[in-house]
Image (cartoon, rainbow, N blue to C red; front, side, top):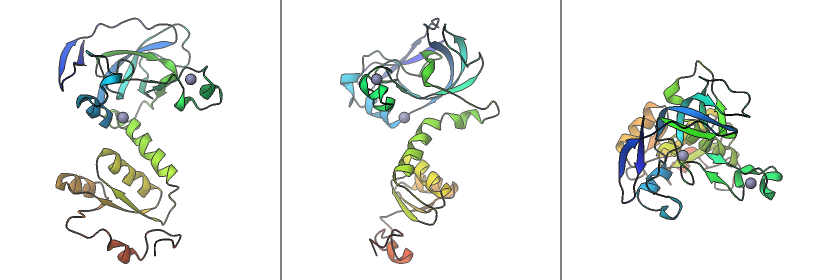
Length: 233
Ligand SMILES: [Zn+2]
Ligand SMILES: [Zn+2]
């Protein structure tokens, strides 16, 4: 089995990965695929050197199946398709006890603070697993973690059906935010300068414009106003 190890200085090497029996409360996962997050690019560029311990396996936008189940783990079967929520909380600090495990004071961001998913065989705590339907398109499933980011952003924006939304930047997250906002019934315009991304967005049914060629500011006259509240008429 193989793993991609980040060794610092903008380089990886491919090495062996030996499957380890899961500890109590853990499962061992056969990783099927793993996306490359913007966070992984930051690590590659050396922006998170103080949190990385090379040679280290990184990555967290993954999809896999359960290969082995440790003692004390309930509710999962070998072979279950799963994704991992990469935030592993301690469950005993004040934040965790108050129900805010995502801001745990001892938060382990898996794939940064501990080994990640760029490896064939990976052990993680069972508390970060999400089981998938058996009939799900498995390649799409690797997008669940960034899609969750987009859903969170659209929820924070309190976007409602009929509102006009402008998304600045058509990277993977901007693209997913556009799709989620559209699914909420918003009229979405995505501003992006990269022609490849503009084409990709259009193929996904997103109204994408290049603000270098088209004046984004003037678009508000086409829509009459940016938002439904009248603040920016
Ligand atoms: Zn990510
Ligand atoms: Zn905690």
